[in-house]
Image 1 (tube, helix red, strand yellow):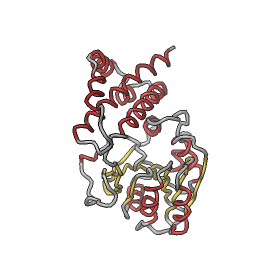
Image 2: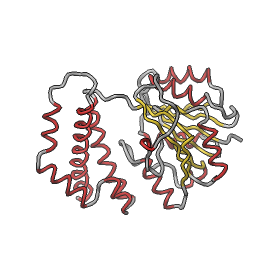
Image 3: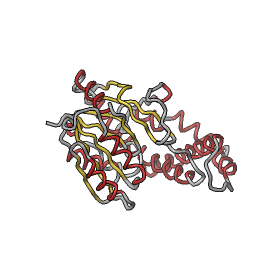
Image 4: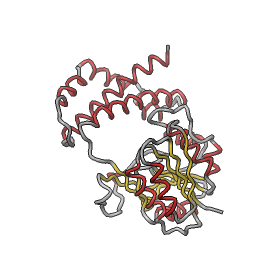
Length: 301
């Protein structure tokens, strides 16, 4: 029986996917101990060709699922349905697993077979110039279930119904799973040696509008999360609480978003400076809270 499934979903990331799959195959765990299941969620780029090349080089069982674009939650469920490992590891299509990655997840699972195993992630701006594989506290994530690098018994994730496919836009689908697993009494352990490199390229001027769209989508799904989980963890994580909403309203009255747009106006296409990145993230935060209020009004009407 296969002990572990690495499951990842991909959408129009052909330039990264080849490296991601190579790293998934290049594991110190024996080839018959794990499998890789990739779901192509309706990619329109060269992803199918990349997957076919990877198929010819796969050293472990390799399953490919292709479907029309339905969003990450539906794609995750398609991968869960095809998985055969006792434990399933979720990663993303911008993640390079270290060679001992599967082995470390299996080691933690042997000690705590019923638990979630959270691995470490090191953010990098280039996949060609990687820092030493040593996790540090600056890369810490407090998420209970973060699909950049997390594993759970396959029977457990199936037992809670997998991912909620009503999360069709960006954001919160893995947090929802984590909250449901926590409510079911599933404990989590952290293994900083189960490491991945998480690709976070430098932001460019053209990234600003995409950040804004993503922030607005995340605000809409935040309302869905809070409706499904009406307690303090969801309210604090999403900003749907009196303190954060009042602070955001105060910033809107001061016209902060307009001032931020003014400082970012007229930029030619290039990499953003550190200051411009901070301004862009602040602007995306304003877009998030503005859309959050609109989505809350719609939800209550």
